[in-house]
Length: 291
Image 1 (tube, helix red, strand yellow):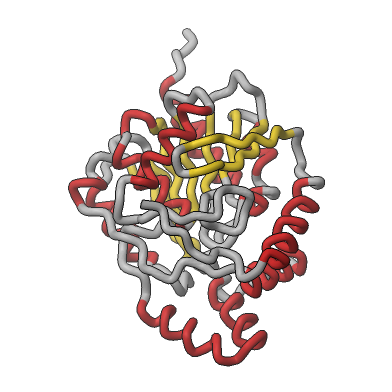
Image 2 (cartoon, rainbow, N blue to C red):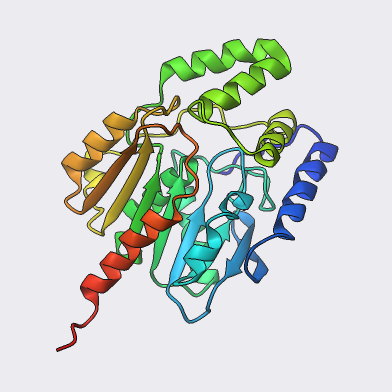
């Protein structure tokens, strides 16, 4: 059963987060439709863009963020796909402020209902962190409905690092300085654009994130992923053990292409070009050859 928790710290905090979200959407680089999809788990907000006749690509953002994170990549994806950027319920976006029980079938059933509402039979799934976990949950439950799977630092493959959880607890005692330090750790020490930094601060100060560890998928479940899979992780990921994630999926998935980015942390952005190389290469392999 979905958990009725206090997702936002206040109504004013929620409003502030959504106002910035709307300001970002005003600068969305391509025309888009705002859709509200009704499911048994509440309303799901969807940004849809790209040619309606193109194959569908579902984008699933990470924890403590929303679909605004795709603003730098969406125009590239829209060149070849009908893109649907979903706000995950229970996160700081426009979807229902209720959380799935991650140890239940609910997350996969929710996405199946979104597929049905959007009249999608099969699609490419692209997810980061929590979104990667949701992509894995759906793909291991309904593998026949996923044509290709792209995973950016996905949770659920290797256990989360205990060291990060301890760091988080410790840094929370130091107010804004601790928050700044935590953001830097999550980004692998890399600089972050001022607007993104300010939005991250706003969300952190007004939103209650998930604190539980995400369930780990069994070997049996992961072996159901017979579609092509692209995995990208950061060497400096403070939350998840990147090398263990690569090693485990490499041992289980025959159609895996994996990359470890040596200078990146948990936040992976501006990867549309290598992702599209992967997606288009697969399309070309299946295209009829000209004499």
